[in-house]
Image 1 (cartoon, rainbow, N blue to C red):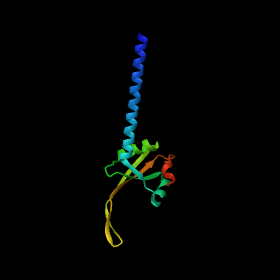
Image 2 (image 1 turned 90 degrees about the vertical axis):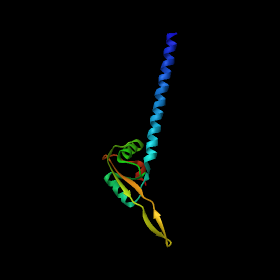
Image 3 (image 1 turned 60 degrees about the vertical axis):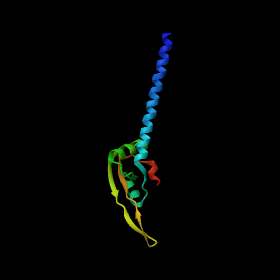
Image 4 (image 1 turned 30 degrees about the horizontal axis):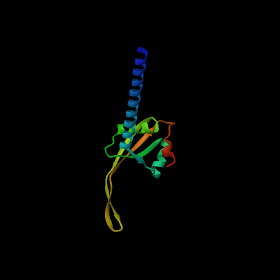
Length: 123
């Protein structure tokens, strides 16, 4: 009888470990989706690829550490430097009417030499 009870206990512990890993995965995904919005595909960002720099639009509440963790978790690369730029809102004329272009924040991420982010390379 003692053998049967040990097996039951070992099954319970493995189930707990599996559920913990699922929670960790959900936390990583929520961090990524709460931080990164999209890669920015412009001529300037395409030229920065030669220097291992990638430009992403991020939420206005994002900071350097959260951007670093999100990039490393999503793309499996090592980030060496993160620079943040806040672009203020501005007025723009469209067909004679005044409108506003929303403010946004972007992050310039430098990865280690030799590593690339494949999803952004083709953009």
